[in-house]
Length: 223
Image (cartoon, rainbow, N blue to C red; front, top):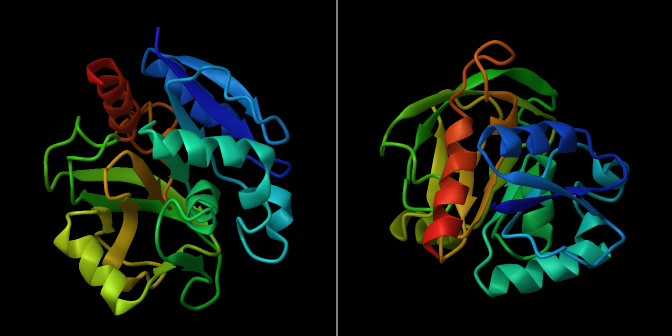
């Protein structure tokens, strides 16, 4: 069975939901502790949402130095699929696995609502189950979710097909409506909205987020 690690930092809120999404997709969820560098032989890693280390200094800035992240960076360099959700996206940017940064929302308000995303690329390790251009409905809940990068980086992301998700309605002021991006090899993905909260229609706005977790399992099986 495919094993997917889910990291817990002090202040993490969504690790339980991410682990549940992994199980719903048919994989084994493996708990990973921030202070332990051992990835326990997992096939993929999820860096979940929350407020790691209280978002002190800057969201994701302290978590980036946790022992577990050193192992994640090394594993990602060898091709392991890694997903960062919300605070996890911030951590991946701080760790240098993804370019750009997440800053305070336009208007400086915390946003908590369901939002439509366009699947802008279905070639990443975490989006193969979607049709190109498909719309998915997932929750957004963040205060520092505005994606920013230099024009050079933005052009590079666009030109290489590394913009993975776009907001249909840009609620936080993200440059070029970007909701999620990937690494150059497509194995590392970060997105601000929460697919783990959209895995069953009974408990979320949809089950549209489940495709992200199925995609990772497909990627591991064909690697």
